[in-house]
Length: 168
Figure 1: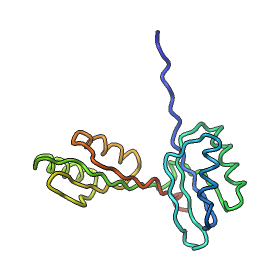
Figure 2: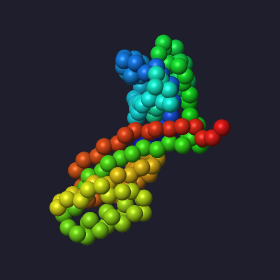
Figure 3: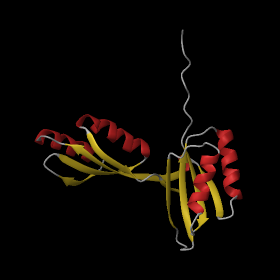
């Protein structure tokens, strides 16, 4: 008996300009929760206009559901603008801090070499651990994480995707 391979939904990046006031984040995340959509990552910060914030949400859903979601986001009162960003025409990055076990000098050296190849920064070296900062696309961060997993990841923190469309 053969089983069909499951097809994963692609990653979509939704960029919203919202009013910078209390409750907006709750209303938007509640929209996702109420419709049982998962948020892969969400970042929020003020824009060049202090009364507005940019909210960048990544999600993996099918196209039909995505269209509905974007329409529903546009109807929310505090939402000024919603754009679905084309991943091929967008600059997007994420930051991750990864603390790994390093029980000996050879593991420290190997992790340092991996960090160099991935253009990551070593932020802290202790007797039994190292902390690395890596910035890039989620795929780049996942590749680095998979490579250093063998040493034992003690802790990891990821910021989520920040994104802007490419030039005008």
